[in-house]
Image (cartoon, rainbow, N blue to C red; front, side, top):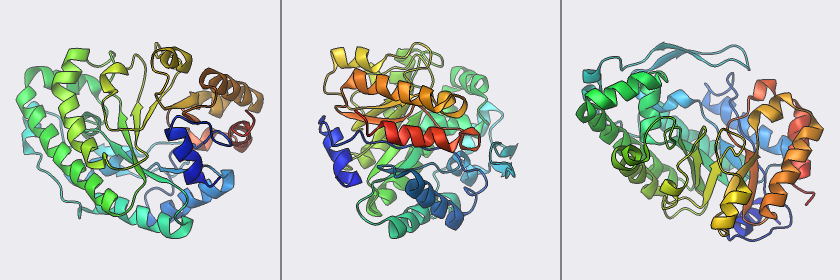
Length: 330
């Protein structure tokens, strides 16, 4: 099977010739340059023969247009250093206005997609990464989650006004990516869990903005919804327009694939291996974890992947090789 055919069978809740597999993580040195980054994504794909390319752009692309600045990392294992973030006081949220897709960091995503497609051809699915609006807001305070929660509590009208501008911005970006021929969007949310918000607050304040962005991709065939961290609100997100639900089954109180499949046998799921195990475990550990995930799903409607971003600079190649090879041994 070609990679796109393998994924299509999995998305139809079928059993392909081998379990589709992919991995991703930040290439800090290369991700600040459009051409270098696109070439790195293609090289990473070819090196491990993944079944899709999940384009893991630098996270700050979401907020640079609003004044977020950073010092680029010179170490493949070290994050970029934030120099300034645009939000510190509740009233700062009121200054945010929608960005046009011609804004350089947003236009860069379209250029990356074009470059990768030109090099990889039509049969390899390309999945672009887009944070959902509250995740973008979190990045605007440089991941000061407690500060964002405070602002939501004391000035919800300011924060919601900003979320409106953010949702408009990324709905427009998703529409542009769709027009460029992307196969799917990897939508990411760190806030769809009880660690950050109650379920009622998530549904009231956050979900409507999520859906404004995601609905622009509803006609794509390979959207992922990544529910980050632990204690996820999986049930609250089942009506999101994503064909694949992706989460880290090893994190906190998250459900296992076996538990979810007992209640929702047709749900297409992705994950199965801890990013920290890939980085710090052995190749045998990787193979054992993959076998367990495949047993839980019977290889049906399942896409093997790390439960979150892999620390590429700290992950041995032999572990990524083991991940790729184990996907073929059902």
